[in-house]
Image (cartoon, rainbow, N blue to C red; front, side):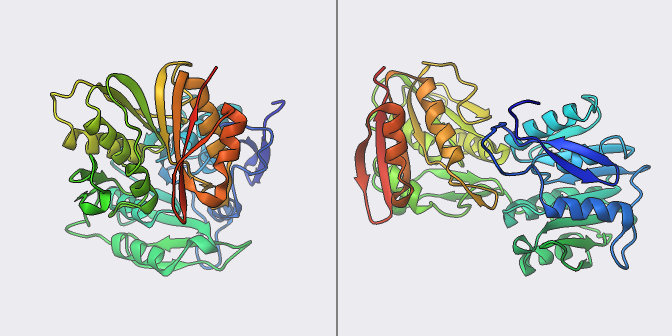
Length: 399
């Protein structure tokens, strides 16, 4: 595929051309890492005292497969194969990689972390996520589908696997041990232990904002956080700073909470501007579920504005020139890699979606230099507020 970032993953079953999503010819990051390779090698050849795994007659479930490398390599080799992901971008990458490998559309069942997991799992493969909370939640949801003969194998880079990670496997699944490290990757082996009462997930977490939210529409909001959503049990300081400087919106209009997380920013704006239509969008299924729960809990049926809750690639699915304002707290990392690519796509996507005269409001760490990107895109950038760590910036689409 000309102009893509396709790389070749070599396995015992063959080579696979894999890309991330969205495809960007400038992106040097691969769609897999050494932990994916280690797991696939183990399934075929075993690891030390742990035998190989014959998946051909098994119902296999893969959780946390970041860009579909595991699902693509395993497609057609198991009795059934299910992938579970929290990432819209990861799901789109998986779909593209499966299609590139010639896998039929029904060859792999694609589920999200909000869906009901398979009823029976013979082999559970876990690519350890960055969020310990998301791992806890999903292991709790998946454990009832395991049986005494199920095989559970986790994988991750050494720096991602901690004592707390192993404790979760041990507590929720059963006796757990690890492999030796190879290429800075490690495997986790957990033996399912039958239990009368499988552990229930403690997620989502619900809490109420107090004075820390500032004297404004955010104070007193009830916030719902599903597992894996940033700052699960408190209001992070960046969001707190943005809430203190929300745009003074009055009257009707369409406003986007871009990268909405638990939806507290968009919900606070909807509470203070009841005529506005607020769109909550994030690439995380957990985040959008959190945002919808937060909004429903706090905004009554009498509100004039119409909310929308979208899981997607930022603002890419919204029509051009269709919104009046965008509020954004962009991430500056992708898994373990620091990058400004996501912020740049959010900013450029916002400019496309904004009407003439529309505004983009951004909260970010001072050192990230977002003002330079906004001036380049919009031709202007105003400093709304700043403190020792954060800046709130405002850019206006003038043409």
